[in-house]
Length: 142
Image (cartoon, rainbow, N blue to C red; front, top):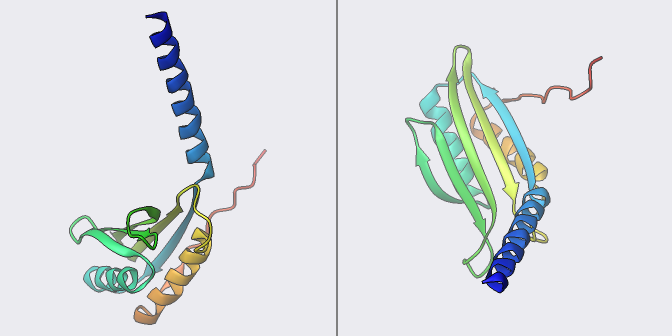
């Protein structure tokens, strides 16, 4: 019994360490874009942009304004990157928030920050008034 408890404890410790390592090794970038176009046009343009990019569409919901997509390895068995897009109607237009994540352990294929920049450029082709929403300064205020 003592042996089993020690083995379970060791397995739990390894699992926790691996999970912490995986979470810290993931790379994430968020692209925020704003437009004054109609919500339906923005959602469809965003959906087309996701589908024509390097990501494969997993699901979309026009009512909730969500799009989920992934990048797979060449074998098609492993997801190495994901994309979650939230399209939100606001009083002065529509906000598009695209979160790009590259899973830990994957080498090559680009960086989420590059994907966000490319995504914005491709989206601007169908939404000419699209503007990038700058990230707020993360300076420490005294």
